Image 1 (cartoon, rainbow, N blue to C red):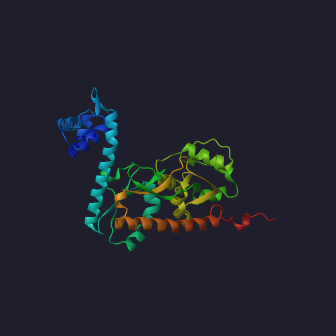
Image 2 (tube, rainbow, N blue to C red):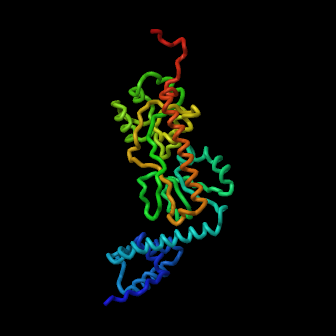
Image 3 (cartoon, one colour):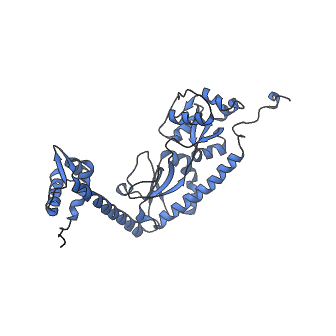
Length: 324
């Protein structure tokens, strides 16, 4: 004989989720814009309806017990599905002209996306984009975003992640530095002012077969800033090939060595979005445009590679050439 299980009081579930995440009723109340007593009452109603507790009280903290952990897994999935459905419904109601909100890393926005925005606008004048450039990992549904471009391993709970590209690290510097280093080989780079973090440079020098004591003169939390510093002659840096490609093609930066390495964390770029929005026309348009632009960019990078070290090794003045 089946045991009768009471229905969940649905209005209590957001309070339960917040309290479970924050392990504190007062913090949950602040997050939900409710009073402490209101959240406490909702948790009490939930436990009374279930007929068993879901939290253990430890002073001011509350901790999920085994029953609460089991319940939370289902509640998280259910509320996430509801959030996706509401966002998809709002998007469908708004039509093609609905504002498409996308969050991306600042380096991706500055060095790759921004130079191509004119082509997006020309192709989709009826789909306005709002770009949020942030280092923070934004919760898409909670913050009202439709999509993101992220680096990582492609696993984000409740989100669809499609790989865009894995872009290796290459060494770049200003034209003046490239001229000075002409013909000296990879070992000469160890004597230059290095911009970036120690692990990445140690990995690169190891791949180049160069013993070097890595002591960077500067580091930034954003790859775009490191490339900008290199353009201004502060030193040489390691850059994602896809982010440096435009500057290489325009001569603002020069590739200094053919050696390339994967980032130490081996993180690629992904296009991320709630599964409920998969067929939403503005999101479909953005996804298609991103992949087409990346395909065109890859052809450009291949051409730059075929040029070899031509940019990294500009021709010397004729008077300085050695006759053989």
